[in-house]
Length: 290
Ligand code: GLY
Image (tube, rainbow, N blue to C red; front, side):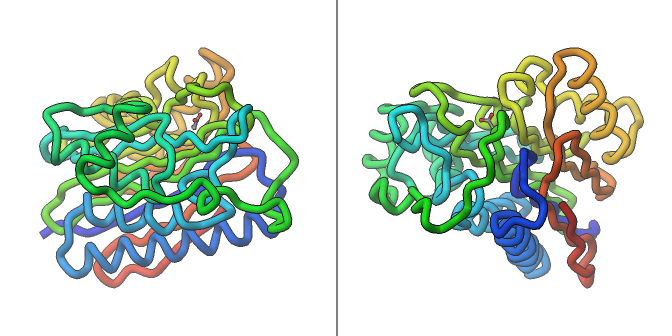
């Protein structure tokens, strides 16, 4: 039996340290890591653990995914998500979807219920309706400015994500986002792009990325972490090396979380902050930071 592990993040970005938003975001990360860990401890799969954890992050109004997603230039919510199974390399992704409270679960249904891997815009919305996936109003996704969750606008996307290893040694990754604040309608970042916003392969690692999507996708950041692990680096060293590469090659800013096939955890960023939480081991204690 393998050692279980889960790592979650609430987005690398221009957080005001000490703000209400980061306090609420950190609490959501703690709750998400504990909920995902409970799934793993009960014998659940890494896929179930990351989906459960991301639901909690998507529900948090202080985080840029699901409820609380940033708005585009037209004041609309357009969300992206990706889930990947490290055992089979199966994946499901959605982009530019609207009126869905839990985009990560729709991405999973793309993986399990279609012969495709990635559905976007009206096609993804039509698929949601076809399978009777729960829809919501846009009002349920938008957080009122009275709620005081806005930091000073920064250039970065935030995003949420989770990676996990279950007791059978299977890895999974899940990423969900509302994208960047005030983005062009139709803009899609790194998050739903396999290898950029996330990747999971039992042979190497499960990885989740967050930050500046336009930069992250140029270097296919999450897959790079897996390749560095394949070259012999630990999860932590691989995350740090991938961020150095992003900086040097395209001047990007991001955060990364990872679990390698040995169950080692990696967490790194070159942004002001990235709330995160993790639990390693059956009786492991919650650890967190920002
Ligand atoms: N990393 C999230 C985005 O750029 O959309």
